[in-house]
Image: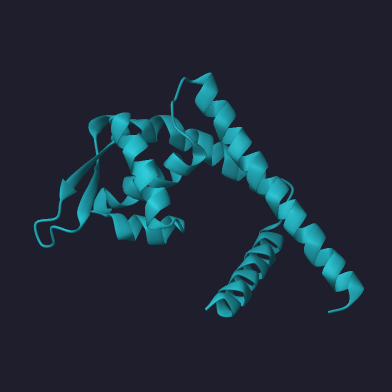
Length: 150
């Protein structure tokens, strides 16, 4: 790898980290301003369940790229906040089915406009073509790392 490619890779990753932290910070400010007691990581679980309604823990872990221990911690905290329920899977007692509570469903109407606002900020002054190119770049980087990790 050439020195300039290496330097650009480092800068790219640093910028990616800054963007990720900025997005988390943006949502954290919204949560705080509206007294919503969740984290960005809990939001990932809720967003998946808003689409799916209920599923097992492994489906959530795969969808949000969390290991089982991290997801268990998130689900424990969401359960304490009365946002999700865990029930035994009637087909396989080792599995737990995760379902939104009424409170968990109600958060969707509060939080979705904030997410839409955030998506708008992400796309502001960025062409659809640039976003598509960036998405392709992220997918390629992800595949490169996954292939080496296996």
